[in-house]
Length: 352
Ligand code: NAP
Ligand code: GDD
Image 1 (cartoon, rainbow, N blue to C red):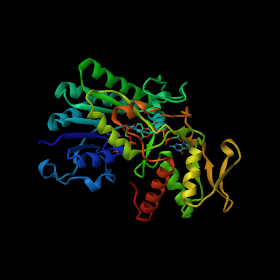
Image 2: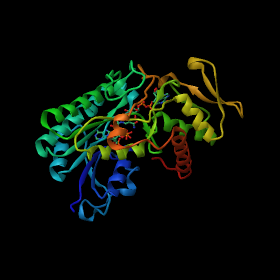
Image 3: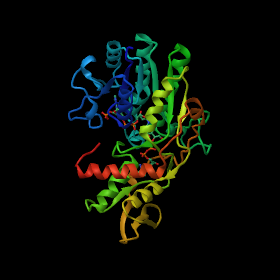
Image 4: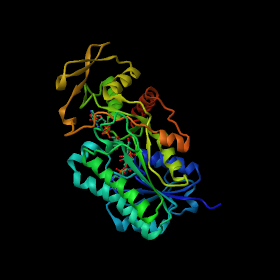
Protein backbone atom coordinates (compact mmCIF):
# COMPACT_ATOMS: atom_id res chain seq x y z
CA UNK A 1 0.00 0.00 0.00
CA UNK A 2 1.32 3.47 -0.82
CA UNK A 3 2.14 5.52 2.22
CA UNK A 4 0.18 8.68 2.99
CA UNK A 5 2.05 11.95 2.90
CA UNK A 6 1.46 14.72 5.44
CA UNK A 7 2.75 18.27 5.64
CA UNK A 8 2.84 19.76 9.14
CA UNK A 9 3.14 23.53 9.29
CA UNK A 10 4.40 24.51 12.74
CA UNK A 11 6.26 21.20 13.23
CA UNK A 12 8.85 22.74 15.56
CA UNK A 13 6.17 23.79 18.06
CA UNK A 14 4.62 21.90 20.96
CA UNK A 15 1.76 20.31 18.97
CA UNK A 16 3.70 19.86 15.74
CA UNK A 17 6.28 17.69 17.48
CA UNK A 18 3.66 15.38 19.05
CA UNK A 19 1.68 15.15 15.83
CA UNK A 20 4.82 14.28 13.86
CA UNK A 21 5.65 11.42 16.27
CA UNK A 22 2.07 10.17 15.98
CA UNK A 23 1.95 10.27 12.16
CA UNK A 24 5.31 8.54 11.85
CA UNK A 25 3.93 5.73 14.01
CA UNK A 26 0.94 5.60 11.66
CA UNK A 27 3.41 4.99 8.82
CA UNK A 28 3.02 8.39 7.15
CA UNK A 29 5.74 10.14 5.20
CA UNK A 30 5.99 13.37 7.19
CA UNK A 31 7.24 16.66 5.79
CA UNK A 32 7.53 19.56 8.22
CA UNK A 33 7.77 23.29 7.60
CA UNK A 34 10.68 24.75 9.56
CA UNK A 35 11.40 28.49 9.71
CA UNK A 36 14.86 29.64 8.79
CA UNK A 37 16.69 30.90 11.88
CA UNK A 38 20.25 31.82 12.79
CA UNK A 39 20.25 29.23 15.60
CA UNK A 40 18.74 25.73 15.61
CA UNK A 41 15.00 25.79 16.39
CA UNK A 42 14.40 22.04 16.14
CA UNK A 43 14.98 20.90 19.75
CA UNK A 44 11.52 19.34 19.97
CA UNK A 45 11.95 17.25 16.82
CA UNK A 46 15.69 16.54 16.65
CA UNK A 47 15.08 12.92 17.68
CA UNK A 48 12.88 12.34 14.61
CA UNK A 49 14.46 14.67 12.05
CA UNK A 50 15.86 12.99 8.94
CA UNK A 51 19.30 13.88 7.67
CA UNK A 52 18.12 12.95 4.20
CA UNK A 53 15.75 14.86 1.90
CA UNK A 54 14.84 11.69 0.09
CA UNK A 55 11.50 10.08 1.09
CA UNK A 56 12.79 6.55 0.49
CA UNK A 57 15.78 6.90 2.78
CA UNK A 58 14.16 9.22 5.32
CA UNK A 59 13.52 6.03 7.33
CA UNK A 60 10.50 6.96 9.40
CA UNK A 61 11.78 10.45 10.09
CA UNK A 62 10.64 13.98 9.27
CA UNK A 63 11.77 15.65 6.07
CA UNK A 64 12.53 19.30 6.74
CA UNK A 65 11.00 21.89 4.39
CA UNK A 66 12.29 25.38 4.98
CA UNK A 67 9.31 27.70 4.80
CA UNK A 68 7.27 30.51 6.24
CA UNK A 69 3.55 31.24 6.42
CA UNK A 70 4.25 34.80 5.31
CA UNK A 71 5.12 33.68 1.78
CA UNK A 72 2.54 32.36 -0.72
CA UNK A 73 5.32 31.55 -3.17
CA UNK A 74 7.11 29.45 -0.59
CA UNK A 75 3.96 27.59 0.48
CA UNK A 76 2.97 26.91 -3.14
CA UNK A 77 6.42 25.58 -4.03
CA UNK A 78 6.37 23.13 -1.12
CA UNK A 79 2.85 21.90 -1.85
CA UNK A 80 3.52 21.61 -5.61
CA UNK A 81 6.66 19.56 -4.95
CA UNK A 82 5.49 17.15 -2.25
CA UNK A 83 1.75 16.95 -3.10
CA UNK A 84 0.66 15.91 0.41
CA UNK A 85 -2.57 14.03 1.18
CA UNK A 86 -3.07 15.98 4.40
CA UNK A 87 -1.94 19.40 5.65
CA UNK A 88 -2.04 20.30 9.33
CA UNK A 89 -1.70 24.05 9.82
CA UNK A 90 -0.39 24.49 13.36
CA UNK A 91 1.86 27.42 12.50
CA UNK A 92 1.19 30.65 14.36
CA UNK A 93 2.50 33.53 16.40
CA UNK A 94 0.59 31.81 19.17
CA UNK A 95 1.12 34.10 22.16
CA UNK A 96 -1.92 36.23 23.03
CA UNK A 97 -0.07 38.97 24.93
CA UNK A 98 2.59 39.23 22.22
CA UNK A 99 -0.19 39.74 19.66
CA UNK A 100 -1.03 43.08 21.32
CA UNK A 101 2.59 44.14 20.73
CA UNK A 102 2.89 42.89 17.12
CA UNK A 103 -0.70 42.87 15.80
CA UNK A 104 0.18 43.36 12.13
CA UNK A 105 2.62 40.44 12.10
CA UNK A 106 0.13 38.31 14.04
CA UNK A 107 -2.60 38.99 11.46
CA UNK A 108 -0.23 38.22 8.60
CA UNK A 109 0.72 34.77 9.95
CA UNK A 110 -2.40 33.77 11.86
CA UNK A 111 -5.11 35.19 9.58
CA UNK A 112 -3.57 35.47 6.09
CA UNK A 113 -1.37 32.37 6.59
CA UNK A 114 -4.32 29.91 6.39
CA UNK A 115 -5.66 31.79 3.35
CA UNK A 116 -2.31 31.33 1.60
CA UNK A 117 -2.32 27.60 2.32
CA UNK A 118 -5.97 27.08 1.31
CA UNK A 119 -5.52 29.05 -1.91
CA UNK A 120 -2.51 26.88 -2.76
CA UNK A 121 -4.57 23.73 -2.06
CA UNK A 122 -7.38 25.02 -4.31
CA UNK A 123 -5.02 25.76 -7.19
CA UNK A 124 -2.56 22.88 -6.91
CA UNK A 125 -4.32 19.81 -5.46
CA UNK A 126 -7.89 20.41 -4.26
CA UNK A 127 -8.24 16.92 -2.76
CA UNK A 128 -5.71 17.66 -0.01
CA UNK A 129 -7.35 17.43 3.42
CA UNK A 130 -6.70 20.51 5.56
CA UNK A 131 -6.81 20.97 9.31
CA UNK A 132 -6.84 24.47 10.82
CA UNK A 133 -5.72 24.94 14.43
CA UNK A 134 -8.43 27.27 15.73
CA UNK A 135 -8.60 28.52 19.28
CA UNK A 136 -10.93 28.83 22.27
CA UNK A 137 -9.52 32.34 22.58
CA UNK A 138 -12.00 33.20 19.77
CA UNK A 139 -14.85 32.95 22.33
CA UNK A 140 -13.37 35.79 24.39
CA UNK A 141 -15.28 36.77 27.54
CA UNK A 142 -18.33 34.87 26.43
CA UNK A 143 -21.88 35.25 27.72
CA UNK A 144 -22.00 31.44 27.80
CA UNK A 145 -20.29 29.82 30.79
CA UNK A 146 -19.52 26.75 28.68
CA UNK A 147 -18.47 27.12 25.08
CA UNK A 148 -19.07 24.77 22.15
CA UNK A 149 -19.25 24.90 18.34
CA UNK A 150 -22.46 26.98 18.48
CA UNK A 151 -21.18 29.62 20.87
CA UNK A 152 -20.80 33.06 19.35
CA UNK A 153 -17.21 34.25 18.85
CA UNK A 154 -16.22 37.38 20.68
CA UNK A 155 -12.50 37.83 19.87
CA UNK A 156 -10.83 40.36 22.17
CA UNK A 157 -7.17 40.26 21.14
CA UNK A 158 -5.37 40.59 17.80
CA UNK A 159 -4.51 36.89 18.09
CA UNK A 160 -8.17 35.93 18.64
CA UNK A 161 -9.40 38.15 15.80
CA UNK A 162 -6.79 36.70 13.45
CA UNK A 163 -7.71 33.13 14.48
CA UNK A 164 -11.39 33.95 13.84
CA UNK A 165 -10.48 35.04 10.29
CA UNK A 166 -8.56 31.79 9.85
CA UNK A 167 -11.59 29.87 11.11
CA UNK A 168 -13.95 31.54 8.63
CA UNK A 169 -11.51 31.21 5.74
CA UNK A 170 -11.38 27.46 6.43
CA UNK A 171 -15.18 27.24 6.39
CA UNK A 172 -15.39 29.36 3.24
CA UNK A 173 -13.00 27.09 1.33
CA UNK A 174 -14.98 24.07 2.51
CA UNK A 175 -18.34 25.54 1.48
CA UNK A 176 -17.32 27.42 -1.65
CA UNK A 177 -14.71 25.14 -3.20
CA UNK A 178 -15.63 21.76 -1.66
CA UNK A 179 -12.23 21.37 -0.03
CA UNK A 180 -12.01 18.96 2.90
CA UNK A 181 -11.13 21.67 5.42
CA UNK A 182 -11.85 21.31 9.15
CA UNK A 183 -11.38 23.53 12.19
CA UNK A 184 -10.26 22.03 15.47
CA UNK A 185 -11.23 24.62 18.09
CA UNK A 186 -8.72 23.80 20.79
CA UNK A 187 -8.93 24.86 24.41
CA UNK A 188 -5.59 25.32 26.17
CA UNK A 189 -3.38 22.27 26.13
CA UNK A 190 -0.05 21.89 27.80
CA UNK A 191 2.88 19.51 28.11
CA UNK A 192 6.58 19.51 28.96
CA UNK A 193 7.06 20.81 25.39
CA UNK A 194 5.03 23.98 26.02
CA UNK A 195 6.79 27.24 25.12
CA UNK A 196 8.59 28.88 28.05
CA UNK A 197 6.48 32.03 28.07
CA UNK A 198 3.09 30.34 28.44
CA UNK A 199 1.85 30.38 32.00
CA UNK A 200 1.91 26.65 32.90
CA UNK A 201 5.46 26.03 31.72
CA UNK A 202 6.57 29.34 33.22
CA UNK A 203 5.12 28.38 36.61
CA UNK A 204 6.66 24.90 36.57
CA UNK A 205 10.13 26.06 35.53
CA UNK A 206 9.97 29.15 37.76
CA UNK A 207 9.03 27.23 40.91
CA UNK A 208 11.78 24.65 40.31
CA UNK A 209 14.28 27.50 39.93
CA UNK A 210 13.06 29.02 43.21
CA UNK A 211 13.44 25.62 44.85
CA UNK A 212 16.97 25.30 43.41
CA UNK A 213 17.76 28.86 44.63
CA UNK A 214 18.47 29.97 41.06
CA UNK A 215 15.99 32.80 41.55
CA UNK A 216 14.19 34.38 44.49
CA UNK A 217 10.70 34.98 43.07
CA UNK A 218 8.48 33.99 40.22
CA UNK A 219 6.65 36.99 38.73
CA UNK A 220 3.16 36.47 37.28
CA UNK A 221 0.19 38.52 36.03
CA UNK A 222 -3.51 37.67 36.32
CA UNK A 223 -3.87 34.81 38.83
CA UNK A 224 -7.64 34.54 38.59
CA UNK A 225 -8.04 33.65 34.91
CA UNK A 226 -9.48 30.17 34.45
CA UNK A 227 -8.50 27.84 31.63
CA UNK A 228 -9.65 24.42 30.45
CA UNK A 229 -6.24 22.74 30.43
CA UNK A 230 -5.76 19.44 28.56
CA UNK A 231 -2.73 17.36 27.63
CA UNK A 232 -1.25 18.29 24.23
CA UNK A 233 -0.16 14.79 23.29
CA UNK A 234 -3.76 13.57 23.39
CA UNK A 235 -5.10 16.50 21.39
CA UNK A 236 -2.74 15.79 18.48
CA UNK A 237 -4.22 12.34 18.01
CA UNK A 238 -7.63 13.97 17.62
CA UNK A 239 -6.33 16.20 14.81
CA UNK A 240 -5.54 13.09 12.76
CA UNK A 241 -8.85 11.42 13.62
CA UNK A 242 -10.73 14.50 12.41
CA UNK A 243 -9.15 14.21 8.96
CA UNK A 244 -10.15 10.52 8.74
CA UNK A 245 -13.88 11.33 9.15
CA UNK A 246 -16.13 11.00 6.09
CA UNK A 247 -16.94 14.71 6.08
CA UNK A 248 -15.01 17.80 7.04
CA UNK A 249 -16.48 19.55 10.07
CA UNK A 250 -15.58 21.80 13.00
CA UNK A 251 -15.04 20.43 16.51
CA UNK A 252 -14.25 21.78 19.94
CA UNK A 253 -11.65 19.83 21.93
CA UNK A 254 -11.58 20.38 25.68
CA UNK A 255 -11.69 18.55 29.01
CA UNK A 256 -14.84 20.21 30.37
CA UNK A 257 -13.06 21.17 33.61
CA UNK A 258 -11.26 24.39 34.37
CA UNK A 259 -8.86 25.75 36.95
CA UNK A 260 -7.38 29.16 37.69
CA UNK A 261 -3.76 30.19 37.27
CA UNK A 262 -3.71 30.35 41.08
CA UNK A 263 -4.84 26.69 41.23
CA UNK A 264 -2.02 25.77 38.85
CA UNK A 265 0.55 27.50 41.05
CA UNK A 266 -0.72 25.67 44.13
CA UNK A 267 -0.78 22.27 42.36
CA UNK A 268 2.73 22.66 40.89
CA UNK A 269 3.93 23.96 44.27
CA UNK A 270 2.55 20.86 45.98
CA UNK A 271 4.49 18.59 43.61
CA UNK A 272 7.63 20.46 44.70
CA UNK A 273 6.87 20.30 48.40
CA UNK A 274 5.79 23.94 48.72
CA UNK A 275 2.58 24.86 50.49
CA UNK A 276 1.60 28.10 48.85
CA UNK A 277 -0.78 30.49 50.59
CA UNK A 278 -1.80 33.95 49.38
CA UNK A 279 -1.60 37.30 51.16
CA UNK A 280 -2.45 40.83 50.07
CA UNK A 281 -4.52 42.16 47.18
CA UNK A 282 -4.08 43.28 43.56
CA UNK A 283 -0.50 44.00 42.53
CA UNK A 284 0.56 43.70 46.19
CA UNK A 285 -0.60 40.09 46.43
CA UNK A 286 2.12 37.54 47.15
CA UNK A 287 2.34 33.75 47.29
CA UNK A 288 4.12 32.53 50.40
CA UNK A 289 5.49 29.08 51.14
CA UNK A 290 3.83 28.28 54.45
CA UNK A 291 6.58 25.81 55.36
CA UNK A 292 9.42 28.35 55.20
CA UNK A 293 7.41 31.58 55.40
CA UNK A 294 9.25 32.83 52.31
CA UNK A 295 7.60 34.75 49.50
CA UNK A 296 7.90 32.82 46.25
CA UNK A 297 5.33 34.51 43.96
CA UNK A 298 5.01 38.21 43.19
CA UNK A 299 2.81 40.11 40.77
CA UNK A 300 4.30 42.11 37.91
CA UNK A 301 1.75 44.24 36.03
CA UNK A 302 3.93 43.82 32.92
CA UNK A 303 2.21 40.44 32.50
CA UNK A 304 -1.30 41.95 32.51
CA UNK A 305 -2.96 42.19 29.11
CA UNK A 306 -4.99 45.14 27.77
CA UNK A 307 -7.88 42.69 27.86
CA UNK A 308 -7.78 39.17 29.31
CA UNK A 309 -10.20 36.32 28.81
CA UNK A 310 -11.27 35.48 32.36
CA UNK A 311 -12.81 32.06 31.92
CA UNK A 312 -12.75 29.33 29.29
CA UNK A 313 -14.56 26.02 29.70
CA UNK A 314 -15.19 23.74 26.74
CA UNK A 315 -17.99 21.37 25.87
CA UNK A 316 -16.54 18.76 23.47
CA UNK A 317 -19.59 16.47 23.34
CA UNK A 318 -19.84 16.76 19.53
CA UNK A 319 -16.30 15.41 19.24
CA UNK A 320 -16.86 12.70 21.86
CA UNK A 321 -19.80 11.47 19.78
CA UNK A 322 -18.08 11.68 16.38
CA UNK A 323 -14.83 9.93 17.23
CA UNK A 324 -15.51 8.32 20.61
CA UNK A 325 -12.72 10.24 22.23
CA UNK A 326 -12.43 11.39 25.84
CA UNK A 327 -9.54 13.09 27.62
CA UNK A 328 -7.51 10.70 29.78
CA UNK A 329 -5.18 13.05 31.64
CA UNK A 330 -6.55 14.87 34.69
CA UNK A 331 -5.37 18.35 35.71
CA UNK A 332 -3.42 16.86 38.63
CA UNK A 333 -1.73 14.28 36.39
CA UNK A 334 -0.87 16.95 33.79
CA UNK A 335 0.81 19.11 36.45
CA UNK A 336 2.79 16.09 37.65
CA UNK A 337 3.89 15.15 34.12
CA UNK A 338 5.12 18.70 33.57
CA UNK A 339 6.93 19.00 36.92
CA UNK A 340 8.65 15.60 36.67
CA UNK A 341 9.88 16.21 33.13
CA UNK A 342 11.03 19.76 33.90
CA UNK A 343 13.17 18.54 36.81
CA UNK A 344 14.84 16.12 34.40
CA UNK A 345 15.29 18.79 31.70
CA UNK A 346 16.87 21.22 34.16
CA UNK A 347 19.20 18.52 35.50
CA UNK A 348 20.39 17.85 31.96
CA UNK A 349 20.63 21.57 31.16
CA UNK A 350 18.04 21.20 28.40
CA UNK A 351 15.17 23.33 27.15
CA UNK A 352 12.44 21.94 24.94
P1 NAP B 1 3.72 26.86 19.39
O1 NAP B 1 4.43 25.90 20.29
O2 NAP B 1 3.86 28.31 19.61
O3 NAP B 1 4.17 26.50 17.89
C1 NAP B 1 3.89 27.37 16.82
C2 NAP B 1 4.58 26.85 15.58
O4 NAP B 1 4.35 27.79 14.52
C3 NAP B 1 6.11 26.75 15.73
O5 NAP B 1 6.57 25.64 14.98
C4 NAP B 1 6.59 28.03 15.08
O6 NAP B 1 7.92 27.98 14.58
C5 NAP B 1 5.60 28.11 13.93
N1 NAP B 1 5.56 29.42 13.31
C6 NAP B 1 5.52 30.64 13.91
N2 NAP B 1 5.53 31.62 12.99
C7 NAP B 1 5.59 31.01 11.79
C8 NAP B 1 5.67 31.48 10.46
N3 NAP B 1 5.73 32.78 10.19
N4 NAP B 1 5.71 30.57 9.45
C9 NAP B 1 5.70 29.24 9.72
N5 NAP B 1 5.64 28.73 10.96
C10 NAP B 1 5.59 29.61 11.98
O7 NAP B 1 2.14 26.55 19.39
P2 NAP B 1 1.37 25.22 19.84
O8 NAP B 1 1.04 25.34 21.28
O9 NAP B 1 2.07 24.04 19.33
O10 NAP B 1 0.00 25.41 19.05
C11 NAP B 1 -0.17 24.90 17.74
C12 NAP B 1 -1.27 25.68 17.04
O11 NAP B 1 -2.49 25.54 17.75
C13 NAP B 1 -1.03 27.18 16.92
O12 NAP B 1 -1.60 27.61 15.71
C14 NAP B 1 -1.81 27.77 18.08
O13 NAP B 1 -2.18 29.10 17.80
C15 NAP B 1 -2.98 26.83 18.12
N6 NAP B 1 -3.61 26.65 19.43
C16 NAP B 1 -2.85 26.27 20.49
C17 NAP B 1 -3.45 26.05 21.72
C18 NAP B 1 -2.64 25.63 22.91
O14 NAP B 1 -3.16 25.69 24.02
N7 NAP B 1 -1.42 25.17 22.75
C19 NAP B 1 -4.84 26.21 21.84
C20 NAP B 1 -5.57 26.60 20.74
C21 NAP B 1 -4.96 26.79 19.52
P3 NAP B 1 9.19 28.34 15.54
O15 NAP B 1 9.45 27.10 16.34
O16 NAP B 1 10.25 28.64 14.54
O17 NAP B 1 8.78 29.51 16.37
N1 GDD C 1 1.78 33.88 29.55
C1 GDD C 1 1.51 34.29 30.80
N2 GDD C 1 2.53 34.72 31.60
N3 GDD C 1 0.23 34.27 31.21
C2 GDD C 1 -0.02 34.66 32.49
C3 GDD C 1 0.98 35.08 33.35
C4 GDD C 1 2.32 35.13 32.88
O1 GDD C 1 3.24 35.50 33.58
N4 GDD C 1 0.41 35.38 34.55
C5 GDD C 1 -0.89 35.14 34.43
N5 GDD C 1 -1.17 34.71 33.18
C6 GDD C 1 -2.50 34.39 32.66
C7 GDD C 1 -2.86 35.08 31.35
O2 GDD C 1 -3.23 36.43 31.57
C8 GDD C 1 -3.99 34.19 30.86
O3 GDD C 1 -5.20 34.60 31.45
C9 GDD C 1 -3.63 32.80 31.40
O4 GDD C 1 -2.58 33.01 32.36
C10 GDD C 1 -3.13 31.84 30.33
O5 GDD C 1 -2.10 32.49 29.59
P1 GDD C 1 -1.22 31.69 28.52
O6 GDD C 1 -0.61 30.50 29.12
O7 GDD C 1 -0.32 32.69 27.87
O8 GDD C 1 -2.30 31.14 27.49
P2 GDD C 1 -3.54 31.85 26.76
O9 GDD C 1 -4.78 31.28 27.36
O10 GDD C 1 -3.40 33.31 26.72
O11 GDD C 1 -3.35 31.34 25.26
C11 GDD C 1 -3.10 29.96 25.00
O12 GDD C 1 -4.31 29.27 24.82
C12 GDD C 1 -5.09 29.67 23.68
C13 GDD C 1 -6.36 28.81 23.67
O13 GDD C 1 -7.27 29.30 24.59
C14 GDD C 1 -2.20 29.90 23.77
O14 GDD C 1 -1.74 28.58 23.60
C15 GDD C 1 -2.96 30.30 22.51
O15 GDD C 1 -2.15 30.05 21.37
C16 GDD C 1 -4.25 29.44 22.44
O16 GDD C 1 -4.97 29.76 21.27
